[in-house]
Length: 191
Image (cartoon, rainbow, N blue to C red; front, side):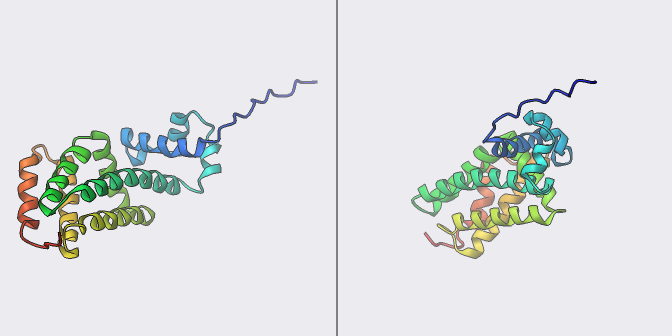
């Protein structure tokens, strides 16, 4: 008669789902979306592989939740900056600070934004995340700009993020400020 296999005790881990989302973001930031496989995320989170399929119906669902978590943080930070700006000139300066400080000065956040853009180009579920992010950004901008100008400025911001990630000579804060003022300086005065 052989001995029964030893079963590992289950760990009580009520925060596992949240930890998996956070770990997915870290794996994506470190290695990119293509390398953020079930196995890589499970290994990084130190959980059994089955935990991912237990908590998420697909890798895309996990990626969408991870990117949504990232967007929630960045969008809330941006909205707070726009809310605190007393007028349009201050809002444009806050936007420069958001771009150069919050997004472009954080290699992790810059990589996550670019990874999201690239993945969303192929995956409709992730495109929904980017669309939600754009809508939130535009609402924040509309505190100080008309809707048309807010949309144009939002598109410029997205282009500046990609430009900064890909260029060997990205625009500095003064150049970004100049571009934003050129686009929104006289247009769309709502505040």
